[in-house]
Image 1 (cartoon, rainbow over the protein chains, first blue to last red):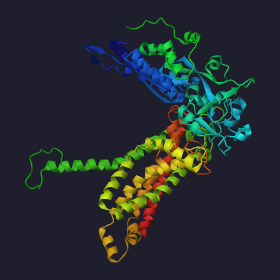
Image 2: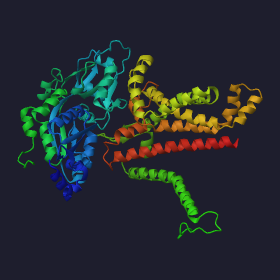
Image 3: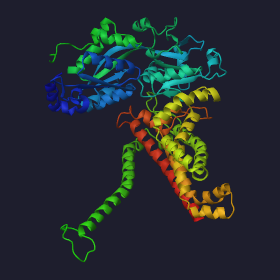
Image 4: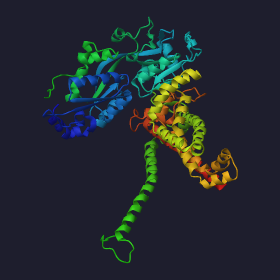
Length: 318
Length: 310
C-alpha cells in the first residue's frame, strides 16, 4: 500500500474509532532509500502457541515477498490472541480453537467490526508419551479417565503398562495453561467439556509439553503434531465409535478419520483490506501452504483453500 | 513570603539573597514531595487493584470463603466455574518458606564472613560478584531452573518431574541470597568499631565477638535483610512460573509440583477478558498477595519494636 493511502485511513473517523486495530495505522515512516520513498506497514500477529512457529516462518518468508510489510509475531495462546483482537490491539489472531460467540460479540462491541475467520491449515492434536513407553494406542475413554476431574485412571498399571527402567507407577499428566486453544480443544473433545483433574503440570507452550515428556518416562500429554521429536511417541487413538486405532498422520487428518483432527485458523477484524488482505491470501497460496507443511502440519486441500478465500473483486490498490 | 522577589535585589540585613532562600524552600518542597510520593503510590496501587477486584465480592456466584479455602481452581470451566485459591496460597508460602530455609543461613553466613572474617581484597571481589548475582534477571533464573536444575533434581533426587517445589525453592533462595548478603553486610558494618575494639580488649575470640556483640547489636538490620529476602521470594513471578511446574495442588513433599499466586496471575491475566469475573478474581488474588506482604511487613515491624523494647 502506498503512503498516501495510509494517511487517508489515518484520518478517516471510523477507522480512528477502531483505533489501534489497523495495521495501516502502525508504521508509515517515510524512509528515504535509493532516492524514492518507501512506506512500511506493520502487521501484528498474536495467539496460538501451536501455530507460533508457522506464523513466524510466514512472517520471515513474507519479507522476501513484500519488503514493505513488517510482520510481528508473538504467542501466548489462542485465548491471549483472541482477547487482544477483541481489544483491537492486533491485526491477526491465530487460534487452534474456534472463536466463541461471546468473544465475537465483545470484538464487535469494542471495535465495531466482526472477526472474520480464515482456515489456514489442519493439525492432529497428538497424544504424546515418552519414547520408551510400551503403549502404542489408547481409547478416547481411557484418555478421558486419565485427564478428567474425578477420572479413575491415575496409575500406569491400570492400563496394564509398566514403564521400563522406572519403578514409578503414577501417571504424570502434562497439560496446558487455560489460555491455550489446545487446552480448550482437548477439554471439549476428550473430556466432553468436563474439567481437568487438578495437579497436572500446566505448561506455557506446546514445545514445553513435548520437552517435559521427553525427560519424563511416566508422562503423558497433548500437543500439536508439529512438535513431535524423536524423544517422544505419538499414540494412535481408538475413536469413540470403536474400530481400529487411528494414527495422527497427514492423510488421517485430511480425511478426518483421526478423532482429534482440528483446523488451525486466523481471525481478522472485519474483512481484511490492503496489505493485510494480501498477506492473508498469501498464507493460503501454495507458497504459504508449503510453510504449513514444512512445520509439520497439514496443508489445506485445494477445495478448502477456495472456500476459505475471501471474495476477490475489491479494487486492488496500487 | 517569597512572592514577588526581585532576584539580585538583595537586602543588606539578610545574610543571603532572597532568591537563594526561596530556591532552598522550593527544593525542600520538592524533596518532601518525593518522600510523600511513596505513600501516594502505595495508596494509588491499592486503590486501583481493589477497584478492579471489588465488584466480584458482591457477585452472587462468588463466595469469599470458597476463594480463600477451596483448592479447586477452575476459572474457565464450561460446567462449573470455581475460584478457590487455597492451593495457590499454600504453593506461594511453601516455596517462600523453603527458599528462606536455604537462603537465610546461607545469606547471613556470607554477610558475617564478608564483613568480619575475610581480607580486604577478597572482600571487594566477593561484593562485586554478589552484586552481579543480584543483577541476573529473573527469567534467566527461571531458565536455569527449567533446564539445569530440573535435570539435576531428576538425577539426584529421583523425582518423576524436575520442575517442582524443590526446584522453585532453590532458585528463589539463590535469588534472595544476594539481597540478604548485601543488606546484612551493611547492617554489620553499621556497628561502631568501638564495639569490636572493646570486645577484643576483653580478650574475646573473633567468633565470640560476632556471636555475643555484633549479632545482638545489628539484630534489626539483619531482620530487615531477611524480610527483604522474603519480600523478593513472595513477589517473584517469572522464575517460579518456569521452575515450579505450575500444577494446582497442595504439595505433599518437596518433589511435588506447585503453582504460586504470582505465577497464576501472570499466566492467566492475558486471556481473561477485561471486566469478566475471571479478570476480577485475578485482581482479588493481587489483593490477597498485597495482604500477605502487608502481614509480613507488619509482623516484622512488631518484632523489631519488640526487640527494641528489650
